[in-house]
Image 1: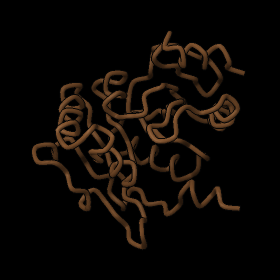
Image 2: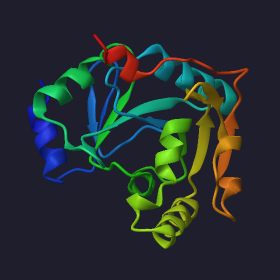
Image 3: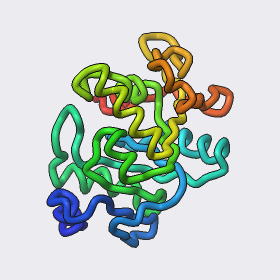
Length: 197
Protein backbone atom coordinates (compact mmCIF):
# COMPACT_ATOMS: atom_id res chain seq x y z
CA UNK A 1 0.00 0.00 0.00
CA UNK A 2 2.55 2.62 1.15
CA UNK A 3 5.80 0.72 0.46
CA UNK A 4 7.74 3.67 -1.12
CA UNK A 5 6.65 5.90 1.76
CA UNK A 6 7.98 3.48 4.36
CA UNK A 7 11.23 3.09 2.44
CA UNK A 8 11.74 6.86 2.33
CA UNK A 9 11.17 7.11 6.08
CA UNK A 10 13.38 4.17 6.95
CA UNK A 11 16.15 5.48 4.68
CA UNK A 12 15.81 8.94 6.30
CA UNK A 13 15.12 10.61 2.95
CA UNK A 14 12.14 12.19 4.70
CA UNK A 15 11.52 12.75 8.44
CA UNK A 16 7.72 12.50 8.57
CA UNK A 17 4.83 11.37 6.43
CA UNK A 18 1.32 12.57 7.19
CA UNK A 19 -1.60 10.44 6.02
CA UNK A 20 -4.95 12.24 6.07
CA UNK A 21 -8.18 10.32 6.73
CA UNK A 22 -9.00 10.33 3.03
CA UNK A 23 -5.64 8.80 2.12
CA UNK A 24 -3.78 11.92 0.94
CA UNK A 25 -0.10 11.79 1.92
CA UNK A 26 2.23 14.69 2.68
CA UNK A 27 5.95 14.33 3.31
CA UNK A 28 7.66 16.52 5.90
CA UNK A 29 4.52 18.60 6.50
CA UNK A 30 3.08 17.51 9.87
CA UNK A 31 -0.27 19.12 10.68
CA UNK A 32 -0.65 21.90 13.20
CA UNK A 33 -1.92 21.15 16.69
CA UNK A 34 -1.24 18.49 19.27
CA UNK A 35 0.46 15.13 18.75
CA UNK A 36 -0.67 11.90 20.40
CA UNK A 37 2.13 9.39 19.87
CA UNK A 38 1.69 5.68 20.46
CA UNK A 39 2.20 2.14 19.22
CA UNK A 40 -1.53 1.73 18.46
CA UNK A 41 -1.40 -2.04 18.76
CA UNK A 42 -4.34 -1.77 18.46
CA UNK A 43 -5.85 1.70 18.12
CA UNK A 44 -8.72 1.78 20.61
CA UNK A 45 -11.37 4.07 22.08
CA UNK A 46 -9.01 5.15 24.87
CA UNK A 47 -6.66 6.72 22.32
CA UNK A 48 -9.54 8.34 20.47
CA UNK A 49 -11.21 9.69 23.61
CA UNK A 50 -7.89 11.01 24.94
CA UNK A 51 -7.37 12.90 21.68
CA UNK A 52 -10.93 14.26 21.80
CA UNK A 53 -10.47 15.41 25.40
CA UNK A 54 -7.21 17.15 24.46
CA UNK A 55 -8.95 18.93 21.59
CA UNK A 56 -11.65 20.13 23.97
CA UNK A 57 -9.14 21.30 26.57
CA UNK A 58 -6.68 23.04 24.22
CA UNK A 59 -8.93 24.11 21.38
CA UNK A 60 -6.40 22.65 18.93
CA UNK A 61 -6.67 19.66 16.59
CA UNK A 62 -4.75 16.52 17.59
CA UNK A 63 -3.06 14.14 15.16
CA UNK A 64 -1.86 10.64 15.99
CA UNK A 65 1.80 9.70 15.50
CA UNK A 66 3.28 6.24 14.96
CA UNK A 67 7.05 5.82 15.13
CA UNK A 68 8.27 3.01 12.90
CA UNK A 69 11.17 2.56 15.32
CA UNK A 70 10.45 1.56 18.91
CA UNK A 71 13.02 2.51 21.56
CA UNK A 72 12.78 -0.95 23.15
CA UNK A 73 11.84 -3.27 20.29
CA UNK A 74 13.50 -1.88 17.15
CA UNK A 75 11.86 -1.31 13.78
CA UNK A 76 8.37 -2.53 12.96
CA UNK A 77 8.22 -5.03 10.12
CA UNK A 78 6.49 -3.93 6.92
CA UNK A 79 3.30 -5.98 7.37
CA UNK A 80 2.91 -4.68 10.91
CA UNK A 81 3.29 -1.08 9.74
CA UNK A 82 0.60 -1.69 7.12
CA UNK A 83 -1.74 -3.19 9.72
CA UNK A 84 -1.37 -0.33 12.17
CA UNK A 85 -1.64 2.37 9.52
CA UNK A 86 -4.83 0.80 8.11
CA UNK A 87 -6.62 1.36 11.44
CA UNK A 88 -6.65 5.13 10.83
CA UNK A 89 -8.01 5.09 7.27
CA UNK A 90 -11.13 7.22 6.98
CA UNK A 91 -10.98 8.10 10.67
CA UNK A 92 -7.99 10.16 11.82
CA UNK A 93 -4.87 11.98 10.64
CA UNK A 94 -1.76 9.87 11.22
CA UNK A 95 1.86 11.02 11.14
CA UNK A 96 4.63 8.47 10.63
CA UNK A 97 8.21 9.02 11.78
CA UNK A 98 11.28 7.10 12.92
CA UNK A 99 11.59 9.14 16.13
CA UNK A 100 10.80 6.94 19.16
CA UNK A 101 11.88 9.42 21.85
CA UNK A 102 10.11 12.68 22.66
CA UNK A 103 13.42 14.55 22.56
CA UNK A 104 13.62 13.47 18.90
CA UNK A 105 9.98 14.31 18.28
CA UNK A 106 10.62 17.85 19.57
CA UNK A 107 12.81 18.51 16.53
CA UNK A 108 10.04 17.28 14.20
CA UNK A 109 7.14 19.06 15.95
CA UNK A 110 8.47 22.22 17.63
CA UNK A 111 6.01 24.25 19.66
CA UNK A 112 3.56 21.37 19.94
CA UNK A 113 1.65 19.86 22.82
CA UNK A 114 2.29 16.15 23.18
CA UNK A 115 -0.71 14.27 24.54
CA UNK A 116 0.29 11.17 26.49
CA UNK A 117 -0.95 8.73 29.07
CA UNK A 118 0.61 8.23 32.48
CA UNK A 119 2.50 5.09 31.43
CA UNK A 120 4.10 6.90 28.49
CA UNK A 121 5.03 9.80 30.78
CA UNK A 122 6.78 7.33 33.10
CA UNK A 123 8.91 6.13 30.17
CA UNK A 124 9.58 9.69 29.03
CA UNK A 125 11.05 10.42 32.47
CA UNK A 126 13.12 7.22 32.69
CA UNK A 127 16.84 8.13 32.75
CA UNK A 128 17.78 4.82 31.08
CA UNK A 129 16.61 6.15 27.71
CA UNK A 130 19.05 9.08 27.95
CA UNK A 131 22.16 7.52 29.45
CA UNK A 132 21.39 8.73 32.98
CA UNK A 133 19.98 11.67 34.94
CA UNK A 134 22.06 14.31 33.17
CA UNK A 135 20.84 13.01 29.81
CA UNK A 136 17.23 13.19 30.99
CA UNK A 137 17.71 16.80 32.07
CA UNK A 138 19.31 17.62 28.72
CA UNK A 139 16.38 16.01 26.90
CA UNK A 140 13.80 17.98 28.91
CA UNK A 141 15.77 21.16 28.25
CA UNK A 142 15.66 20.37 24.53
CA UNK A 143 11.88 19.92 24.75
CA UNK A 144 11.58 23.25 26.56
CA UNK A 145 13.77 25.06 24.03
CA UNK A 146 11.64 23.63 21.22
CA UNK A 147 8.58 25.16 22.90
CA UNK A 148 6.94 21.79 23.51
CA UNK A 149 4.46 21.02 26.28
CA UNK A 150 3.24 17.72 27.74
CA UNK A 151 -0.44 17.04 28.50
CA UNK A 152 -0.66 13.94 30.70
CA UNK A 153 -3.77 11.77 31.11
CA UNK A 154 -4.23 9.45 34.08
CA UNK A 155 -4.06 5.67 33.76
CA UNK A 156 -5.23 2.72 35.82
CA UNK A 157 -2.03 0.98 36.84
CA UNK A 158 -1.40 -1.72 39.46
CA UNK A 159 -4.93 -1.33 40.79
CA UNK A 160 -5.01 2.44 41.19
CA UNK A 161 -5.62 5.44 38.95
CA UNK A 162 -2.27 7.23 38.60
CA UNK A 163 -2.05 10.84 37.39
CA UNK A 164 0.49 13.57 36.76
CA UNK A 165 0.58 14.18 40.52
CA UNK A 166 2.11 10.70 40.95
CA UNK A 167 5.06 11.41 38.67
CA UNK A 168 8.43 12.43 40.11
CA UNK A 169 9.10 15.42 37.89
CA UNK A 170 12.70 16.66 37.86
CA UNK A 171 13.14 20.00 39.60
CA UNK A 172 12.69 22.95 37.29
CA UNK A 173 10.57 21.21 34.66
CA UNK A 174 7.11 20.95 36.26
CA UNK A 175 5.83 23.93 34.26
CA UNK A 176 6.17 21.88 31.06
CA UNK A 177 3.54 19.39 32.23
CA UNK A 178 -0.24 19.79 32.54
CA UNK A 179 -2.74 17.20 33.74
CA UNK A 180 -5.64 16.15 31.54
CA UNK A 181 -8.30 16.00 34.28
CA UNK A 182 -9.96 12.67 34.95
CA UNK A 183 -13.30 14.48 34.81
CA UNK A 184 -12.57 15.14 31.13
CA UNK A 185 -10.91 11.83 30.31
CA UNK A 186 -10.67 8.46 31.97
CA UNK A 187 -10.73 5.20 30.05
CA UNK A 188 -9.61 2.06 31.87
CA UNK A 189 -8.54 0.14 28.80
CA UNK A 190 -5.15 -0.94 27.52
CA UNK A 191 -3.74 -2.30 24.28
CA UNK A 192 -2.09 -5.11 26.25
CA UNK A 193 -5.44 -6.30 27.59
CA UNK A 194 -7.07 -6.04 24.18
CA UNK A 195 -4.36 -8.23 22.64
CA UNK A 196 -5.02 -11.08 25.08
CA UNK A 197 -6.86 -14.01 23.46
